[in-house]
Length: 79
Image (cartoon, rainbow, N blue to C red; front, top):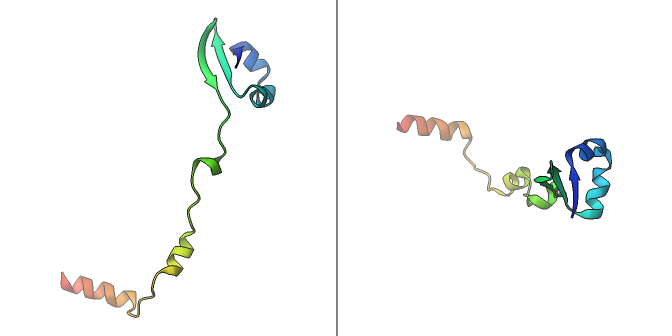
């Protein structure tokens, strides 16, 4: 793990990506005290499982033979 102070980080922010790739972790220090640990972020695809599409789910549901308007009217009439 490489340590870097705030001044160095500001001056070399453009090169931080390469440093992270090399070191895998950077320790940010201010006045000799560690204040943060910088690690590479995980890609979004790795953090969340991919869900099937909503369209595929809707298409898998059985089709109702009764129109929705009729079902709503029946439900309202029951109340």
